[in-house]
Image 1 (cartoon, rainbow, N blue to C red):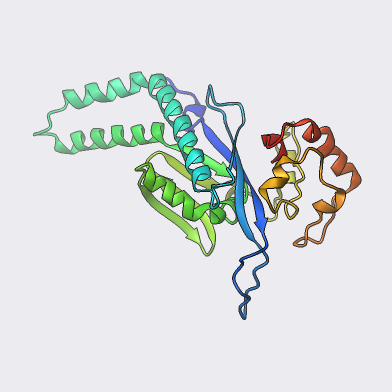
Image 2 (image 1 turned 60 degrees about the vertical axis):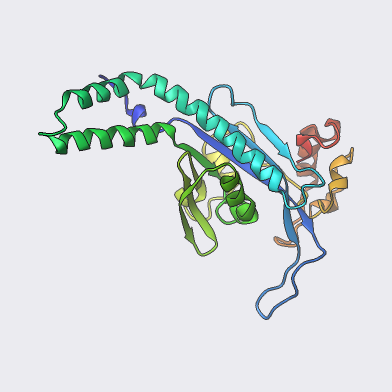
Length: 269
């Protein structure tokens, strides 16, 4: 059997990104070391992959009654598992000859007189099967932000779908890896040089799209998802970075088709 260098690397992946609503009321009281400004409530998640039949971006929006985004995260994980299942099917089909060969070798070996070889072949097949069945999920700065925002609902969704979490690698509040039997959730930032921003990341890999701009602190109610015009320039101000969006950048948002998008459309988030 002949294989290319690319065959040694898992070929598929899923990427995702959340947008959150800021709730300024009902926040914990200020402590000696911590001041709470707002709660971040997920209102949408967008996903995309390079798996056939799943290459179009998919956006899930939270419903008004889904106050803690439990249903939103459940839908996200269910969709990820649908993608993983299709990727696994494609890879098992592609490497069916390898799996058949391993089965033949297992049948040919004498399990009584050659237990060591039999154990090795059995372990090898199991490891290869896990490789074909494990989908890589990557976010950008997701270990520090996205996964912390949804961690309660995320582990709840895994439990509801009977998907056991095998292990979690965490450094302080940074989730390095969350591993189940079918998904391996990673943060691409951990594999980049320090200080590598998302805008630089897109530019470095010659992506045809650029980083978008979002009025994060302006979105503080579900009603604003129904607005039919782009928020004013002042809505894009960030108290975290103390930065304002330029007129040019706001025009880019306008040209992106925001003002023509239907109410509560994914284009709004």
